[in-house]
Image 1 (cartoon, rainbow, N blue to C red):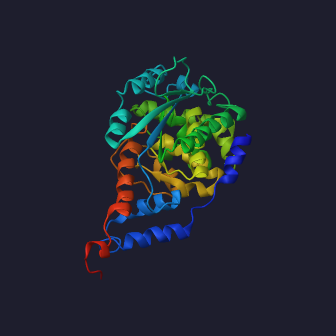
Image 2: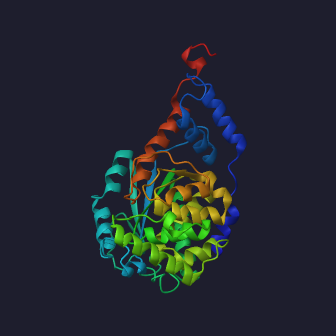
Length: 350
């Protein structure tokens, strides 16, 4: 708990003066004012987050957190929980969607076992920080103890602290955990006070009958556990997931260390939502990669107060959207750093 409390105390709002300086630099480039739209937004925000008007973007790492979920025993997913460790092994072989897109964007993928019900052998690219072998079934009781939730958050914080020391310039979030759209829907329903039906979708591709069952199971879990909406740690503990907690910690740690963090889709945004409910200034450090097909995602984004960069109808997770968005963010930073000014180019300004 001490690491979490220390991290929360370190988080400060982004300096508005730095944002203004970055925009002034962009306004002097050889283009009409604001003509590069959101590329200018991400460039100035990246500069303000890092405190550098010519920031480095070279070392990009996506942390894909993996954990299992007890709620799977209720039949809420199309796939069995054995797929979680199988997909982790696929990540480590470089064969998953996130691996392909990360290679395309020049990012490294690191897989974090924070709660998989499987004992992995040490392997390159695998970080074993297991808190528990999955959560418990939140339809029958609390998903975690408060101590487990804090421990998983602190795994993410520690990774952000290590990333700062390593010189990582941008981090992305990803996840793997069969059944994890159910805790994500439960988290936004609990925090925003909306109905479960409004925020629950098909996840891995379940049919209508399974979707109705999923909605009933999530509602039963909320009714049983009664998470306190004003206490994000209580919500996370009662209906969340270990990988969601790890992502929340990474987002908090990135904000405390002034590292830009690119948040992937629905499950990753559940973690970012927990982080932003713990400290409102966290949103200053977040780039949201894309709008997920999952219907609860938009409500999460609105609650945090962030606007995604892409809408590609994605719903894979893993960090795939984050990998794609990293390339766009890097493009915005390169405009800030590399595009000529009117004076340098000998072009008359308006």
